[in-house]
Image 1 (cartoon, helix red, strand yellow):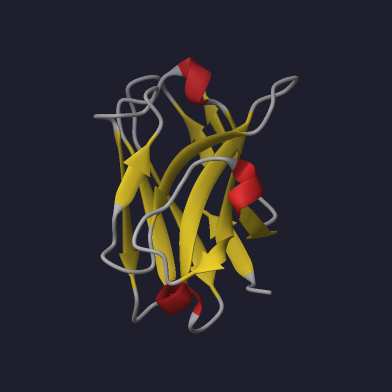
Image 2: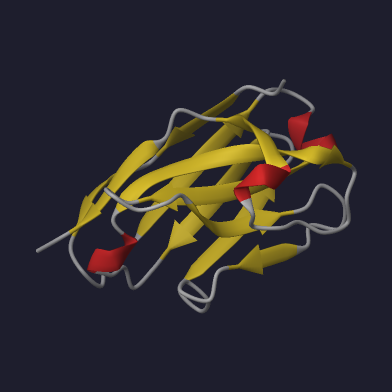
Length: 127
C-alpha cells in the first residue's frame, strides 16, 4: 500500500486560504488517483476532490467548486489542495487517499474507491 502524509492544515478566518499537501510514497502518483476527503465532527466522511493518475482529470464536490483547486507535482510526489474563500462549513479533518484502481483516466469521490489513507490534518475556519 502507498504511504500518504498530509500537512498544511491550521486555523484560518472565513474568506481566507490554505494549501494542503499530500506527500505520497515514490511512484504512487504514476499509478493511483489521489482523493481529498474531509470529516467534520458528527458527520460522515465526504469526498472533496480528486485527481486521476492518467491525464490528471479532476473532480470536485459541488460544495467546493469554484473555491478549491487540486494539482500534483510528480517530481515531488505530492498532491496539493488549494482552498480559497474558506467558510466555517469547510472545517474538519482533511485526509488524502490513494485509489484502489490503477492507471485510471478518471477519479471518483466515494470513499470506498480508496484504500490507502493518510492520518489527516485539521482545518478550522473560524473568526
